[in-house]
Length: 75
Image (cartoon, rainbow, N blue to C red; front, top):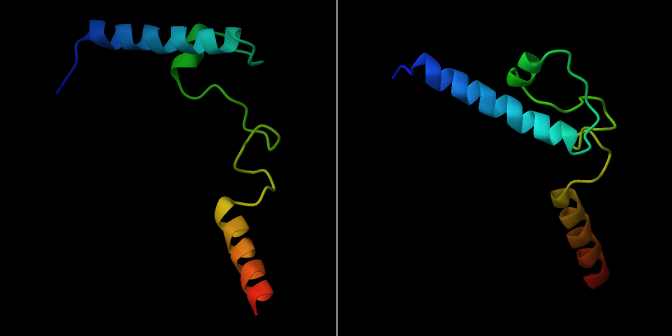
């Protein structure tokens, strides 16, 4: 299903305005042109900002450790 050009422009403007609001809300991010905001995500990819890259233990690992500790105490 093909969309009209006006629909595409409307969606692009909506995405740009949403991301501008996020940036204005305190997220420190720099963009040179507004069109860059329609291209993708607006977050930093450094290890300090990525949640998945932190060295925290996953919930399943914590549960496994707790169950092993419980079984050791029961034995």
